[in-house]
Length: 313
Image (cartoon, rainbow, N blue to C red):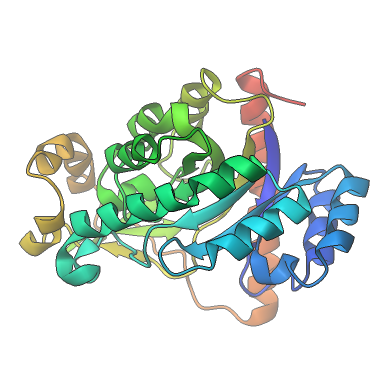
């Protein structure tokens, strides 16, 4: 497994070029980077040489599957010799799938499946995996369905370890379900806080939240290739509000989803009223320092975790 950095871990401290991101990876002795196409596309041949010189692999972060210029993204990935192209199914956050296609999430999934099938010839020609992320919208079962519908090994999953919580699925069980299809990983953790309509997901360093990383990574080791990329992608600065107490929140999920979420919801009910909100306002200089500190803590934690499961360097 290759440990890396996703550019979206940073906000005040975000690298502004491929050169800066690669230098950040080198500083922390990481083996992979994930960056948006705009950062990589200006000089792909030069960036490829930089990556090769530093022994760093890369994943190209695309946008929404149905909106992005997928042909250009795949061509760029081919030029860079990238490990994968990562896409999302929608702009949905907080599990609120009512915001897509008038609430017809299943119709949206069918359109996504058709788009994936259209891309198969190009994926197979370039031999580049397309990694579909659980971007606080899709369930594990839906991602498996999309992979199977594509009919090719080059459509897989980008597993975000924290985002299953947004659709009320346990991160470990989610990982176990999608493990045979995972070709990229976002390492993310969350603290849980009480909220009026459910609970908040709050950004934190890896190992300081509720994700059981040992269990998640062990689920992946039975299926993962030796060079599976694990990119640290800490969450957004703002809290995410999972409004599961609103009855209409459930309307885009199958009836079985609520019963399947029962154990997780019981856990949410036990959250303390006085959980401290640690996302306090700070100035830019303090935010830059905080982001680097959180990232450094996460690298140290994940190196230790990979060593524990026999995947250390």
